Image (cartoon, rainbow, N blue to C red; front, side, top):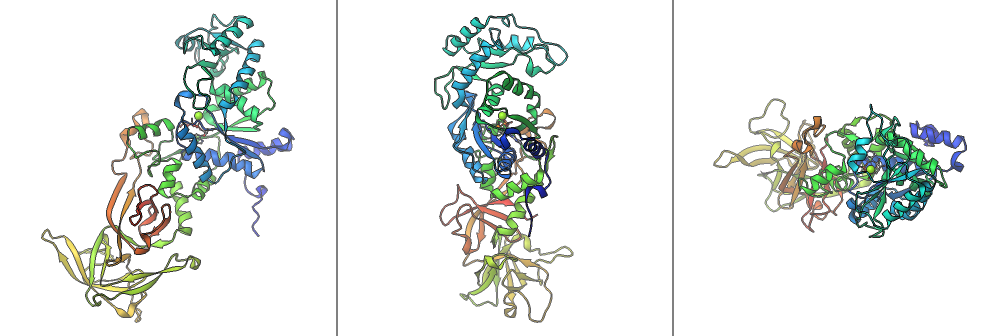
Amino acid sequence: MADDSPTNTPTHFIEDIINEDLAAGKNQGRVHTRFPPEPNGYLHIGHAKSICLNFGLAAKYAGKCNLRYDDTNPSTEDEEYVNSIEEDVSWLGFRWNGEPLYASDYFDEIYRLTEILIQNGKAYVDDLSAEQISEMRGNFYKPGQDSPFRTRSVAENLDLFRRMRAGEFPDGSRVLRAKIDMKHPNLNMRDPPLYRIKKTHHHRTGDKWCIYPMYDYAHPISDALEGITHSICTLEFEDHRPLYDWTLDNLPLPYRPRQIEFARLNMTYAVLSKRKLLQLVEEKLVDGWDDPRMPTLSGLRRRGYTPEAIRAFAERIGVAKNDSIVDVGLLEFAIREDLEKRAPRAMAVLRPLRVVIDNFPEGHVEWFDAANHPDNPAMGSRKIPFSRVVYIEKDDFQEVPPKKWFRLSPGAEIRLRWACLIKCVGVVKNAQGDVVELHCTWDPASRGGDAPDGRRVKGTSHWVSAAHAKPATVRLYDRLFTKANPGEGGGDFRAHLNPHSLQTVTNAMVEPSLIEAAPGSRFQFERLGYFCVDTVDSKPGHPVFNRTVPLR
Ligand code: ATP
Ligand code: MG
């Protein structure tokens, strides 16, 4: 029997940290993580890496994982994003601990703790402008300078902070800053702002607040209030960890979480920045967040990706501490591997070429058995109709074939998948000289696909019966960008959009069993790839098929 207990699978560095913490008896043996999206966009495949990691660790250690919205920036947040995030996390197969949580639920508590901080002389109200503050912050080579307001008394700071809260001062006129060290080698520690004035409506707290805590300050407090044990974030926050720890050190909080950074996912031929994805949506360079070309979870879902494939991808790319770029081919490999096992086979012809079977009686129909999966009899079979006129793929015929051409050409014989052998006996062209119809004969003794005399026929084509097939729209996708690293070298990433990323085939012909296929269902169209019935544009009786991925 396979043993898949945690001890037998290799661990990554975060699991090693957790194992050490557990061995040392930290956190009363608890493992509690959180996934903290900012509700200012739809989740993408990079977020999936973080979701699989955070929820995966909770599952592995019988712990908990919170879903917490980091909604400290009122101007960019939206209810639509909140809903999409919950849908995406659920779709990926994860369930958060309790109800979704919001950093904004802690605004009262954060405010209360901040008054304590001020009383302890650890924070001050600064009247300098944002420009002055940034000017006096110094840089990597130059130490910062103290603000003239840094020496204000506790009483004055408390009074000003309360009046900031009361709405007495305009946006940007004052900030509350941590009193740490303006000469600290880490710039994030040079008296960072903790609260800013922003008279903006908040999607949850309405107009109750006109001051909002900064992300770097609200995050450790939220983690501590929730009893988070391991606060996992991406590498760009490594330099912020001293501030995370400073916040925990200087406030009376019930728990002591630990921040751990890992490398974010970067992927070729994709942009994984919500800002850039929003730009594509707003400028209508794609058809919304769930455009099947988008690297968003809603786009991948609509494209036909399965949660299983995305989880397998996340597992395979692993968790490391150094940045790298993952080849999008790895994601495509994961979906092929999953769909190869589970997608039923079907036949569709994208560019139909009419083929008349001269020796097949008019009006007669033969029904052939077609397996729904070549290696899995449990998936059953279906009957497919064969009649005097069939369609094959235009590409499967060449009048003057190259060497080693095993498909159809004048005089050649091929197999029609699941049906019989046919031989080309005539070619009909239009006035422009294009081939518009073929004439063939069939061998009635080859019913099912093989000749009784054992003659070898190498080529096999997919096909549909003209009298039975139904028209359908098929969308073929190419990469959204022409460059592996769009915007490389500081250029505009939009300059590398692929103008041929979507090709719509409006007159494909599909086998009759496909016509009532449910939106969201997935198939392998033989020789063409994996396809998914579009959930948005399909109409009853007229499905739209999105190609998830070609066969190779
Ligand atoms: P963006 O950089 O696009 O603005 P973000 O990191 O600000 O994204 P959040 O909503 O703050 O987006 O992200 C929620 C969580 O997902 C964070 O913990 C963040 O570290 C993680 N995350 C975001 N992008 C990636 C990525 N590409 N790879 C791994 N984790 C990511
Ligand atoms: Mg963020």
